[in-house]
Image (cartoon, rainbow, N blue to C red; front, side):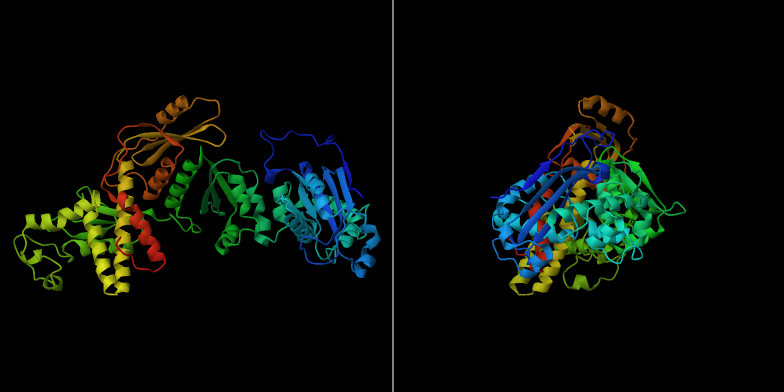
Length: 588
């Protein structure tokens, strides 16, 4: 039985220059250091169903040097159409002694291992190889793929070549090998074409494997023209800022690898219209290096909040958050406000919209007899009652039908307790109302009450989590980084005051002490988020609540109310899921 021709060269004679510690990242691998396996198949002309391959030719190259060759005929187990024999010269008699594809695949996959697969019209060849692996139980290694046909469409103009056929490109580059519709000859011709295309890529500032793969994809002229903005950026966690010609921030983002993330804006994967518009206006990209991902996320939020970049959609206006508070007067009521005053002691929020606050207020009014009018009532003179008093939904403090102490006991105290401690009263009342409405088949009304339940529970849970953190004067925490070092954070009153990293092998304690000594001074303030945006404190909470984060020191206990909104988390999840499915919530 014929065996594959398999010649493997040595890896000597590589270009000078040492890779960085830990090796080159795949996308950043210079093209002259990339190992390519250039592949060509001959087939029976059918669909890629796991068979049909009649010949495989593959050449391994790196740095312009041939490292190995694999070539073999393959018995497809089916007759060859006459037109294929005329085209390739491969006859049935030639294939009869050849090995079947399942015997060739192990050698080919070993030859391909850790290399970049190159082919002309690569989807065709890759489709046949993947189907053969699937049919015969071999795992497809899913290598990076570079298509010389696609690359030629980006590098060569119509004035240079009329089409991107392999023969046309080989003639254009005057390659020493010409395609003959035989696998090895065509693979060698593709190698020559690949080298010719790579020589042209330098003029497009394409020097790495990742750049070449992305360059081969269809990108806009703006992306191609502005891709130099990603040059020279650091490969570290941090924040990146696209700036206009007048240095105005256009867009702020964050990433664990600034260089890689910014490069992605100039690839075919980026299809957002507003980002295309932003790239057209951008003139430079500024990088702000950070100690770790948490610091990067926090800095991003602060920069977006400070500058409101036109192409950012989220987190732009933290000052637009609203609160629901009990007014400080003899007969308190609920009021939606943007700022909490020092006299405010019972409140709920923050809410991202006035609509959310109004839903939570409706939930409270559903549960307790708190007045809903907006008048400031006097304890000396009366005011005419509204219709709610006549319906029995308000105790009519306006007409002094209820005393201040009684109003406090029946209406104000339950609301205050629900806001700062236990929302049981509100939850029970709303669930009972939902059950009543559902039993009467008034499902739309039940769904509306469920929406109020979700609003009040979500806000109460959010506020109690925030208060648990922001009342702590200082909290230090550490988390293992991927390289074996430590990510360190100092949080003061819910604000990230300091951040640092301890490299592998360095004890984190002295580094943490230095971070604490140089951390921002944060004074206590009023409200659940006195010194930072709610979103910043919530990002910190998410980082602290990770299983691998360790609390090092804290100036006070980090806790939530024992009978707080946290015990209704499962109910909130079910209610939100029911709302998404447009189903009424039932009391269980």
